[in-house]
Length: 141
Image (cartoon, rainbow, N blue to C red; front, side, top):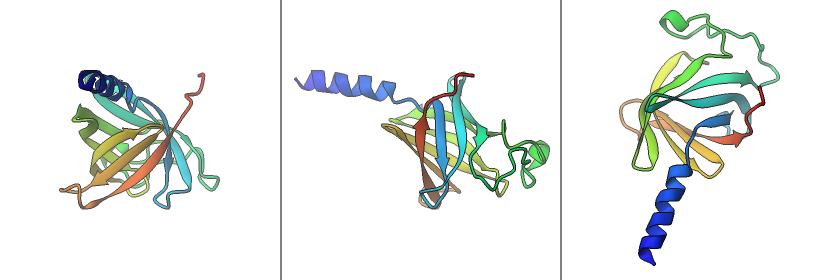
């Protein structure tokens, strides 16, 4: 029985991939900000903004505060997540970019059903913030 339970847990964990579309929620825990598409790049994951959701945001907004070659690039299509690798039931080792501030952070992600816990931090994971994103159906385009 234990072997069956452990086998089921492993199979379930394997299906909990963050690949797909996610509704990013602001730090207030209520306000949807964008749709982020997480996709595979080799053995790692990346993510880009595919749609802006705030009514007060220009759909043609550019990342004014982004560093280097990303400065003044359109926010829609901007890769904000990269280098994420699966380890011990979560995704880690990558970076996340906050397009509102232009700052980059280390990142960890954990899938919990239709929710994705995204933690950005500097140095140690203790010093950061977590957002809970909601899985959405991918558009047919």
